[in-house]
Amino acid sequence: MMADRSLNCRKCGSRFLFSIGEQEYFKNKGLSNEPKKCPNCRVLSRVEREGKDASTTSEVNCAQCGMTTRVPFQPKGHKPVLCTLCLVTARQPAQLVSA
Image (cartoon, rainbow, N blue to C red; front, side, top):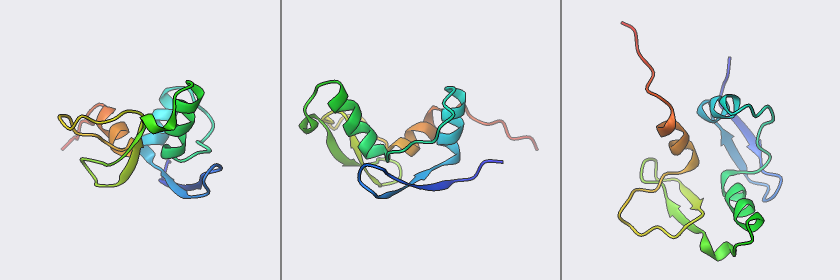
């Protein structure tokens, strides 16, 4: 049975949550290893790997939970921006609840 796990980022050293939803997402994508970097460092690494400047990213508050998160774009303000945890949860199909 899966449970939320607290991990340490190898890049910045901060603790981050590897939620049940993220674990299921990783499993569905065929990823067997847990993440080594926090979501913010993953965004920065992806941007740098693409040869872009880190200044193209933005730190914003998640529209759903309020947590500060980094995104690989400059929000224009007309759409809500979600953190990684809320985005993964929003992408999962609705679970049917049996009565």
